[in-house]
Length: 67
Image 1: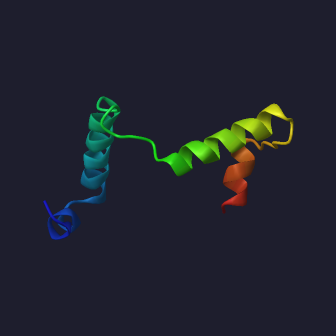
Image 2: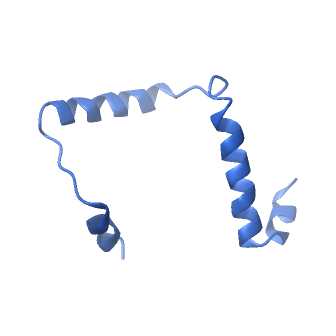
């Protein structure tokens, strides 16, 4: 499948295809390694939370800020 074929699909069909692809990757998690840079970011965030330096907002507030 190529991009031209994908563009012929409806948005709904493409979203369904994405769901199928993501589901297939979930069960093959040993084949997909987390990049080192991602691990570093997660570790920094965990440290910030543990030290009390993190701030959080509600999902509702996040949605408002993105409008």
